[in-house]
Image (cartoon, rainbow, N blue to C red; front, top):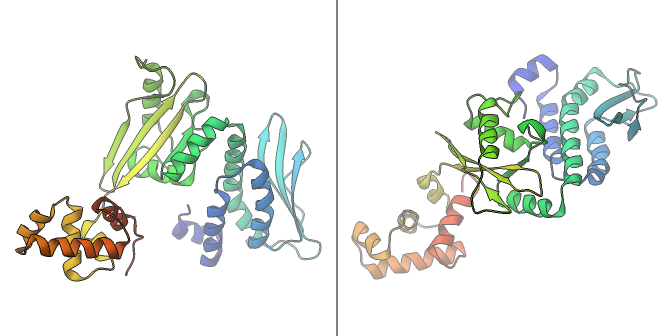
Length: 305
């Protein structure tokens, strides 16, 4: 989210300030309606910059504040009306550090507000679809006119810049992606009437695979679905499990798809012995079968056990 080494030197903010901003961004980009976003942002901002009052202002007269004890951040302009966030305190002036913090936060507040407003405009059917995809670990990007994203999350930006050479944080939606989208929208899909998944774009590098899919129909806006499959380090995944050395060896071969007789042949032991180890593994991991055990291995967070 921040290139801290560069920004720290140029902004005058401290490492603690950047840590606070990073935590704030996680909350800012949490999916929310416009009403919920407006409710939680004043408290979040007040936690970063000490102030007596943080209020929303809507209209044509709000201007960026230049007074020592006030700051006004214009976050959105829609249909000639602008939405601003106003910070105020009566006695203590806002410092240069305070203004730098809000300057760094302002574009993210603006983007997150746009996301919230767009979420309010999404139909109930689209909302259910998006919620399901996000919960499954995917990212969803709705398209506006001109094949551009109507809104885009930080994780989607991270994935696109990781797998597309011509993508950057400044322009995460490069011409390569626009051309693919144009081609998808031009190609008819025979035999499909409602939801129409097109041919996905598969992007691979040393980090893993990013699958870019498009869903378009006649009733709702086209959307792009991003799914990342990072490369798995099997040895590291198994090492982090709360198992004995022999059980980890068995678990390694379970993850490789080996059967009990095959593992027995590899390890030079009886099938019955392997079966006992497998049962111990399943019990310790709290699962019922080998597939669930594999999912536990790869879903554990990285770090020492």
